[in-house]
Image (cartoon, rainbow, N blue to C red):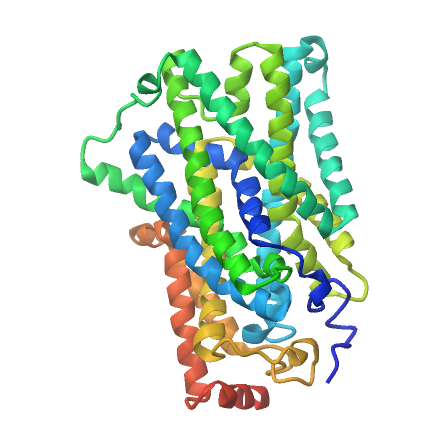
Length: 473
């Protein structure tokens, strides 16, 4: 059976060829350094200081969250490297060739929100630096929105150039951002007087109970931060030269990059408390507070490169493939990227970044309840049900074993709905709000357990028999 069903395949969705597998371990380390060293990571860390943690509590929370999310990240990455397939094709195995559109679109919508957030950050960075370098221009009506749309357009140009331009962008951006992060840390250290002063802000919690009330939802938010990439990491690992290249590159790159840049964010935010009497969690506002044009210009370049890196890598590749999966004959990777860009504008990113509470406890924790169940189903299906064996041709054909019932696996849909419902029920039922605080974890384990149980009931013998039974149901 050849991979040629035009309703389920196009050039961007087909398995990668050996010639396309050019990514080495360095590329995956660079991927994570370039995606981690950006403004929302900085705000992730600094917001924990703003919520009352000291630097050790904040670093520990971020590190633990990233070690946790690294597990499903590496598990889902395996199929991409082994079979060369992207996320929206991989998800067809548990959900069916048509049912896969539901989790793919849920993932894509979250990515659109992130795309809008990153574009807004890039635009406000340009505007804030203009306020220091050229105040009369920055004060003109509509300039902020012009900066926002200008940076958004720059993202669209990179998207139009294709996925290979992303690899080149990140190969350059990773070492540059490492140098810039170190420079920012040293510069603020000089301003604050010493590292001791920078890290002197004590914990604001007076009891373990007070700390845990913030720690657990914050940990969920840390996991939720990369919950998107934990799903669509096959979009990147399909280009890996080997399984070890992507696994070792990610195992080193993600926790190390996040911890290093978290420390920068926490140190600089702590220093802002020493310098200005209150924590400034937004680095753009902090840099502008010093009113130094040269520093502002250099910081502008660093922020724009960092934001462009993460926006293209984390927030365009997956939704572009996801939208392409809806109608492969008409929607290419480029077209999917344009759809992502316009939906990102429609989601009003300035509202999502209004406060630390809106960012962490609203946005990050909230969407983790949507993505955790999908991750649970993916991991359980691939490792517990399929034993890492997939029929790639059937993933691209309606008559294959993944067609299930009219292209949809009802067991996966039931597991997804139950997982999301239980994870988010705390928003509506106050006595169950603790479930929302653990939204990603609750959704992951609920959906995974329900899915395996339903699939085992369908065919309790082995993965091959499950494929036959559910395909006939």
